[in-house]
Image (cartoon, rainbow over all chains, first blue to last red; front, side, top):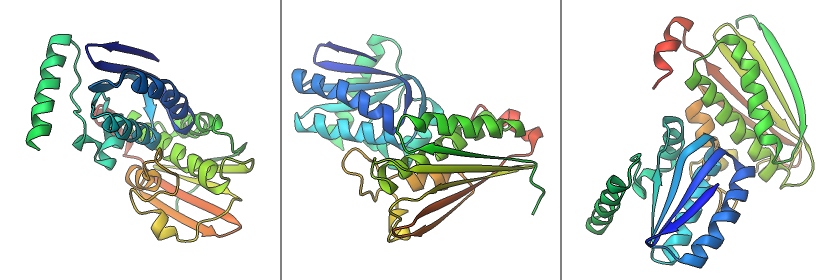
Length: 121
Length: 151
């Protein structure tokens, strides 16, 4: 998994299969970075995730709780249909955008829009 | 009941590293029925949830055996996942979406995923003895599977 930090945005590019076994490993990589950088936005990028069960929802909800403690926000990116299907059972779409974004300019727009939406909501 | 075409039985220790093997084994076996890609993904996910429940809840991350059996029929498969763990006191409560005793990192969606991805889920549990989860998945008639796979 690659984790990048730039301009107050921490992005974790999740990779492979997410289940109870691998979610623990991913969590242990992401959390120290959240605590170190206290980013304004955490992006979980699911683009390279080939399988996910409800452990992935637990992973997303757990990171959302942690980033909220630092007054940060979270977004999930590039979720394939089979990932959305699991996420929707938990209503995770209510806390995070489901839009897949590929170029940076569009991504920035999306973050701003998302922040507006959350303030209004 | 239709005739059983083929069946398999698999016993694995309750190690979290076996979650991946369990779901892949069942879906590789189910592939004989030539299901759609989306149907196979549903089966993998449901098996992963049931096996994870055995590891986390039934055996509380301690050693134990998980027995997985799968029967194939013409347009359907039945998967049974059995443990000899602690059992569930209140099955209805355990099956409520978002209810979990697994702590902050668990979404409480295991049974909700099984129920939504499979056609029928039956849970039989005896506290102190163990739990059997039986899941049925009806496959679309073959002629319709290809065109739905992209959904």
